[in-house]
Length: 461
Ligand SMILES: Cc1cc2nc3c(=O)[nH]c(=O)nc-3n(C[C@H](O)[C@H](O)[C@H](O)COP(=O)(O)O)c2cc1C
Image 1 (cartoon, rainbow, N blue to C red):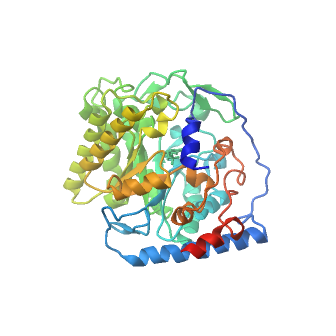
Image 2: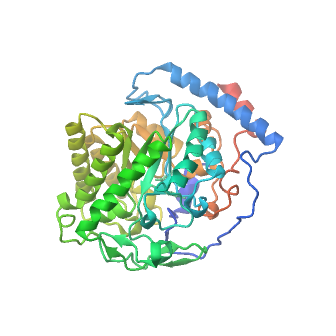
Image 3: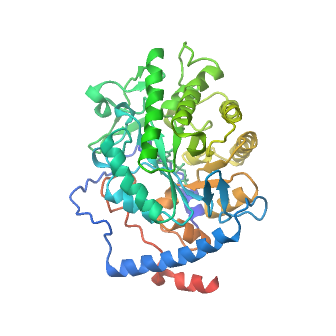
């Protein structure tokens, strides 16, 4: 069955642990499983090696074809792309995805295996949201990048990815009000731009696997904000110390930065609230601080102006997106350097839960995305509901330079190869998106093998 058609039917929304229109779901804790770095049978290893050899052959071919930037109708997901110091051999990016496998906030051998599995020569990976401070967390077993132990642990993950030839950025994350006192130091209320809690429509995933109500946050005072900005900067420095090639600033999906950007949340009366200039201030300060810490050319920024995830509504999504872009463009001009990329989540991603998402919405979305793309003076990455076909169209039409894939990459560690071969895809199991087992639903999705049609596909190449 065509995955696209299947997903259309699902019209179900899930993201980052928050459940909208919550249905009881099972939550499995399987901590006891013994983990080896390569937990495979001999047959698995031979299949993996087979697929890897094929991948190397394919990707070597594409990276040798040209180092020039290909643009236009002939551009595909497999055309190389160059940004400053990075030479990507293709444009299929691993989207940042929270997977809740970092027991006590420390990445482990399973992370190294998971990210290495999704690596390809000249590929680009973005890590799961990684917390920048003890107040930044709102999920069970999310990794951080603010202690020495975390930095050391990430180094093993980065090394495993680099050994496979991929480039990897760390996504810097503060959830703001999308948290709970159980995740906060001293059981304090979560912090935000506001004192308004998330509506009852949203439920928070708690450490015991149950779902709870989001509590009332505490609005940061004006004088507290510079310290949070500093946490982003320090975390970026830590990420580079851990060996990451760069960082992505998570300004999307209703988390802390988005809680400042969106007028549906931000009700402040100081210089961080009210006008669009003021609402953009926190993001701009964060970007500037991170630039001062690690340099512009190692920074991606993610925004989702038109997405209402976590009640993050704005009365003028296009206006907001353009306002952010104008500020990023100005900063780039001032610095005489470009950021690595801007990453924008398509409204379509959250629209699957809405029955009224029709042709008109699609046109509105295309209009929004094209305007943002046109306005941004740099590399533009899209995410949300992309299939192979949609990704191919987006790069061929110039709507995106890079496309990030989330759920398909969860269940297809060799997604790049499968896309290249137009091979069948494994289905993902949403029940294991946020569970803690280091293998089940994490590193055990199968690679292409001789047994499932690769030989035949190989013969067609
Ligand atoms: C399990 C899961 C976890 C996610 N966690 C994050 C995250 O930590 N940071 C983020 O920016 N987006 C997160 N997202 C959104 C993805 O990056 C991506 O934009 C989204 O899945 C849409 O792409 P897709 O349709 O290809 O899955 C998550 C999505 C899923 C499914």
